[in-house]
Length: 517
Image 1 (cartoon, rainbow, N blue to C red):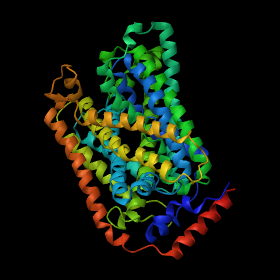
Image 2 (tube, rainbow, N blue to C red; image 1 turned 180 degrees about the vertical axis):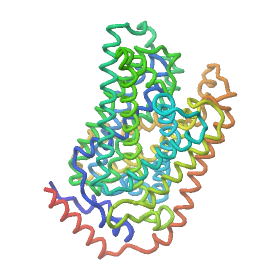
Image 3 (cartoon, one colour; image 1 turned 180 degrees about the horizontal axis):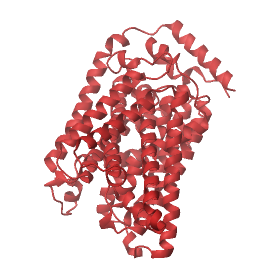
Image 4 (spheres, one colour; image 1 turned 120 degrees about the vertical axis):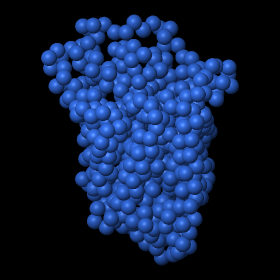
């Protein structure tokens, strides 16, 4: 492997503390690990029911967005991730393009989405599944709270383990996820031969403006995150060569694992029976009728795989996003050095891991205070997670564009076309993200603008005022937290960067890269 040039070292602007933390990192991730880490994180079973609820046109818009968004987005970060390697990924890229303040805000939006999503959407989804098929407890009961707390903290403790051990949890989760989907698809094929499928006409797949407005934020959220593996690129054996391949392979797998299950759900369930929190499991329950007396044991088996896959998914996100936020803290962009410490033996950011667990728990408790069904609460929290995550990409994608133009001499093992094509992909994908962000924050406003009727008394099944209070309150809290965190990190930034430590870092990276050859 070619040595990394000095201009490529993402450590060139780090604080001394950030450099110190990289010394305890354990280079354990190979290409196989990276692919399944990303697949475990990004391919979300929880999204299948949500998007399928819009009916057959979901499939049409899914194909459309795979072509115009997923493909260019994966090409952008296959290049950026392989060119700018270093622990912290997104934070380092945004800092390099726009400076520390912008990177501080971006990293907080990226990081906090994961505990919000785990504590709200994922905990609610799995509690609903367990309540209906595994362990019977009522919604809002002590058992409900305990189950959700157990789910949250299992993902946190999985992320605390050393990466040499922890990486197998997302890998196992990806295995259970793929096994679950394959079992579902094969069983659905048998069900179709015995009972037929839904009478879907070609016209029912026709795209509508309302469907586009509703589905775009959800589908973008389902597609985003393939660059997350770069948060741990300081722990990869050969990041420059493995990142691009891993991003493109996992994006291809994601496209397949969204298209086939969505098509299957639409074929076996009428749209009126599909909701976000249980649409997929209703479809599974329906097709498992082919097993006769064994249907219930098979359903239990499927639910166990479903739950383990989701635990692996939560752990994958915690592993990736917590490392990014810890490096931001070590670099003086998030409350000084406390959250920037990596455990000297485990090589993991334990303080940020625990903070993620606390945030996840608090958000779960806040969501439980909202009134509404489990499906409504799931959709509300999912909406907040979509909003915070999409927001971060309003800086992440432009950062990739800026780096392409401002640092053309950086070695790029993978190059996604000439400058004009790369910038065009960045403009298109950022436009979609901006559109999705607006829709997720202010649902119904675009429909009203184009003359479509919309009920503003409710949003996602709860009162519009409650939804906006939670969404806008969350955004305001994140921005304030990011700015305060950056301000509190000033003493660490003022500690300075010595030329000697810079030279030592350069020598160490060159030595490690030669060792990987």
